[in-house]
Amino acid sequence: MNKKKPDLSISFCGKRFINPFLLSSSPVSNSAEMVERSYEAGWGGVAYKTLVSDRIPITHPSPRMHPYHCGEKKLVGLQNVEQTTDRGLKPNLRDISYLKKRWPDRIILASIMGFSNDEWAELAKACDAAGADMLELNFSCPHMAVEGSGCKVGQEHELVEKFTATVRKVTRLPLVAKMTPNLADMSVPALAAKAGGADAICAINTVKGISEIGLDDWVPKPNVFGKGAISGYSGPAIKPIGLRFIAELAMDKRLGLPLSGVGGIETWGDCLEYILAGASTVQVTTGVIHYGYRIVEDMIEGLSDYMAGRGIASVEELVGKAVGRVHDTGRFDVKRQGSARFDLERCVGCGQCYIVCRDAGGFALEWDAAKRRPRQEQDKCLSCMVCSFVCPVDGLISFEEMPSGWKRRPTVTLG
Ligand SMILES: Cc1cc2nc3c(=O)[nH]c(=O)nc-3n(C[C@H](O)[C@H](O)[C@H](O)COP(=O)(O)O)c2cc1C
Image 1 (tube, protein in one colour):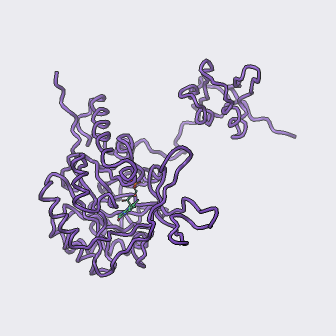
Image 2: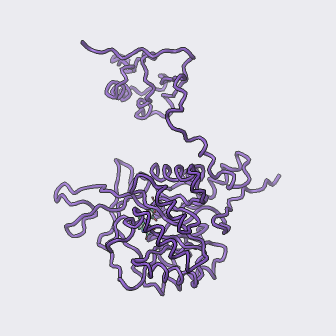
Image 3: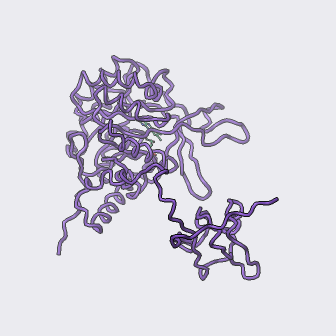
């Protein structure tokens, strides 16, 4: 029997996307030639690289990126000092017009950043005339060389409201305000954007950071001819931060706007987590920089298989499904307790579990040196589960709920 394929198409700000997967605004979306190749791979749309007026010509620092590797894992993070597009406004607008005519079913968010009120208005009008489907207002780049722009705006809610309202006055296109994570409470600028007329919120732009300092020259990386900076950090390491902000915005009843989730996405599972947290569309940069446009094939196939396996007809059914499951920790049922369970048949005798149990405050493991095996006193186990995090054998140590009334033996104190 030929079962109906799950429907990945989704509505966002009144537009229908063939799927929720978009390139985020960055070097991966910097020209028609690039965007066209991404469309051929299957991306549903693009937040085009941020456009600025030609009044202040942009020259990027060199080098403009630095990779953060973690042990064997390459590029768990990416540090960048890149600015907005360094291509002229005219060729970019021509590219947007071309893309819209050639690929009418793909959605273009034209990302813009003004350096004055008038520039916000001019850029919005120009992108509207070029045929963009919506505008993404960049209130969030953390390392702009032009004073008083980027996340400096995003951190001042009056400015967010003012510039959003300026753009709202000159166009009827849907407005997506892109937020900086470099603040404590994103609801403040997000509500200001709503007050100014924004139709949706996008989060997050890069996290301010220093991923590495040269041990020989003491310069933060990327080392731009002897100078470093606090700059934008992206990639898998920031996914927890992006998910947190999307979930918080989705839970905020005052906001009630659709969300576009960005930050650390590489796989279909990452996309799904953002969707479950409340995003209707998801955006990617570092994953594409690392692996290329082709990662969207895994996103389409993986999400389709997941939905088919669960009998979910439309991706829209999944949006925000985790939101009701995010609670204050005070609401946890702490009467229910568990502990680590060991399947010692598969133990390779490395002793990592024993070391971390002692040094992370557990004291529930002894080490049988003759047999090279841990010996567990289960009633002392804190259920921190760090033993399972370091065990080289997948699934050897699992979490097990203890019977009701089970009591943990207190840790012995000296003296
Ligand atoms: C090299 C680079 C350039 C970027 N340029 C822009 C930009 O022009 N406008 C913008 O809104 N975001 C820009 N971003 C931020 C990304 O769009 C995205 O929000 C961020 O990188 C987090 O997503 P990721 O982890 O998938 O990279 C840039 C990111 C990188 C790495």
